[in-house]
Image (tube, rainbow, N blue to C red; front, side, top):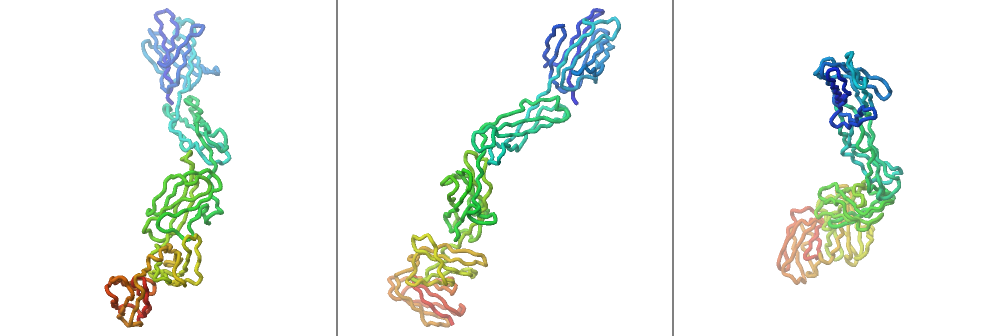
Length: 480
């Protein structure tokens, strides 16, 4: 352990007794007592020497006595004048000591004969830097504030072992803003008595205890997914969709949405459209994204406490096949286009323009659906794609895909073993678009022709039924 440097100087000239002079360090403060002795108030500085000097050839014996009246030792007998000796015996810790000096050589004298000086060694001061306290939290019934970093203790001397502890508490455990947080520091360790802190208590203002933001687990999904939120039952299409949420407690006014797929754009802290326990959050479905299931993580917070946010809410949602998978063939028939030959378990749905509720069409489980009286409103299909459930986006525009320019389309011979002649009647246009679709609704050929007829060759295709469309009008042909 490093020790206090304490300097005691005795000046004796010839046979004349001189008063004892005790000198501490430059920082010592000296005051005279009533009997002429000196009192020194010094700070323990951890140095390792006590030095005495005397002239001429005289001797001096000095002892230290602690506050309990116990003499610690004779620290030095000075016998060789004009030389300096260092003694290992001296006060080592903070305290109040009595220093007594007496002559060694008979006949030498001091005035008074025994000189006594009081030495007070005060604690060295430590300070703590870098303490981090979280001054916001959700209500938990107690007033404890979290200390995430106790900081670093600075100012220790030598190899001394002293550590510090930090605790923090709100002024009360109730929900509210503008709270004081009291941070308390304590010291411990073998040399703790030689030190003090520059501050033992610190007050941090503007703390807050908020009501927890808990999702309503009866709203939405199960098994930890979509609890407190509802997603579109029939999936999402490219563009903007909405997630409904419902909380039981809290006062959120901002949200954060992090997606698991980089195709989506994460939403960092953004104001809710309607702050409070219920509302909806828009999600942007990028164009061209692959149909399938995706997940995201939703958080809530109040902007007054930006570091405090809710537990994560896991969201799972489905992105649909584009509406191009559903194609009106003519005025009363609409088809599911199976370009991948992987769609099964088909079910058609319909709703009229302006309606919000989708109606399942009983028995509509084929690649084609025929609507008696003509196609109206909009349609979509639920199905399985490679065994995974999916949906198509709704096809809304029936009239735009059906042309009134051509009144009739004929094909012959029908059935055919190969070549087919396709003729149009009553057309106002001289140029026509012919599409050939297989039984799955997949376009296998596109032909542009002028005049009233053209020929196509089906000999390369399998036996079965094919659909020929010209300007939105349809005819069927059988390939033998």
